Length: 292
Length: 205
Ligand code: SF4
Image (spheres, chains in turn blue, purple):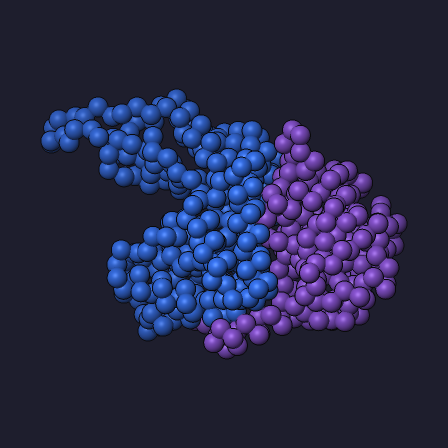
């Protein structure tokens, strides 16, 4: 960490070359696609034991086998290697050198896709729909944090699940009950198409766009980590029970394991509003991060 | 116990009728691949009365967009994509004789009836298990619409490729049945379809 500077004194920024970020993105992208996190794998193993539907148990066991195979052979666990979402948290004492940051991130996506035999799943325009042929660009979120390091997180978001995500601008009167209804209803509508068992990311508060971003951050939080606030943690647990009563089950073929986790993030909001976003994550919840 | 299903390269109407929603099958033989772009082209060709580049009669179409094969691999990861996106093309494909469509996920409610009226079936493969499923694919070649790249129509040789019959030719719908049964058993909520979201935007102030 850089020395704290008093007023009038200057700290030298730490120089970070954008090439290091490019490389990190490429490596994390491959790693995320090949190696599902232990949090998800453990949860799938546990679900395979707890599921009451025999077909559901069978499906969960096969999913575990798929992830083990992908790790071992270093192949993508799922063919939808996703739209690449990159979160960069950049220390305010960092000076980025060596070129355009955004271009470095996209170059990392291109490299990781090519070297890792990932799928080109990006169209260059949402309406004209021509495949860009190199899986770039990704979606980049940048945040400034204290310190002199850079935190790079890469998530691969498949659209079977992304397509089922929703956002609502609830009113203060809707309250926590309104939030619960909206979350459960969104999972119910997602049903079988989002590759359950799901990981449900919920963002509550902020503004229209921040709620969606919080939901995305919630989806990529390790699923064995509950929210530090006891009331939010209780809400996560209650919602997980509720969605698991929907009967959707693994692959939507019935059972009690519709979701592996509900992760919630919250933020202050306006006196007149209660934004809620639900980002539906499939079991193939792939993300990796590194500090530079 | 899984049923061995031979598709070499097509199924007879009698083969199709024997399949029941809930049956687990291991498919050996030949599949065609087509997803959004290829199905759209096939449907448009049919609507225009043009000949199809491939005979669909008795065939199973697998909705898949694999990853590129690594050196030494036959095919990359090759799990199913969401079938319901192909809903606009379903009648056209079935009317051209397609015996079965394989993908993942459920369909809008009236779709089971469409499969029944054409005598076709819907199969599901394990969504998100592309690495595992690729192991059951032994050969692949492009046979039509090559310009579509990964979305071109490919022919896959498969050996004991695992799938589940989700809608049979009698119109039974496994997703709907299983979900209702398990919603009851899991002490579930009544399905709610309130239109709270979007319909009641917050009042700014
Ligand atoms: S929803 Fe997820 S697991 Fe299913 S196909 Fe898409 S990326 Fe893969």
